[in-house]
Amino acid sequence: MPSRKLTDDQVREAHARCVAGERLKDVAAELGMHPESMRRRAKQLGLAKLPSGPIPTLSDAQVREAHARCMAGEKQAVIAAEYGVKPSAMQQRRKRLGLPALPCGTGKATEPRNADALLKAYCQYKAGRLVRQIAQDLGYASESGVCEAFRRWRDWLEANA
Image (cartoon, rainbow, N blue to C red; front, side, top):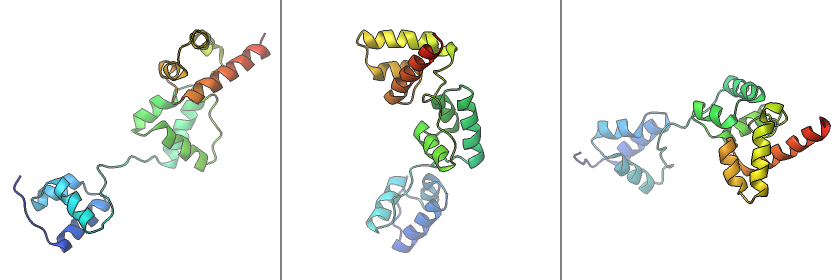
């Protein structure tokens, strides 16, 4: 791509277009510059860092829908992937909306349908397997989710014994 020298004002205008939502790649191509050259020039002018791509966000309705699906037993990590966001982003939005916490992280560990998987995972844990590996196998977003699942599962066993 041929390089073209832009004035500081042209760089500021291009930067403003990118901040407003236009893709850097498109703006740079229109001006005959490489996107990284545009980033470098914006940085030299002390302008805010240009985004590398659109940042996915969830509407309040999407957060509520995702929360309802999690409460129904779907895994939060799977739902987050469908929306193109991280599970932690969904958690933060859920908290801001005042929605109740999800039972045992990303699934309902208190339900008997998960008891077999949790028993197997707990045996693996007692045999020395890392909680991080167990979390990945079960589809939990974090190790703390597995620990919470074990606790809730134990409580469920005690209550239903």
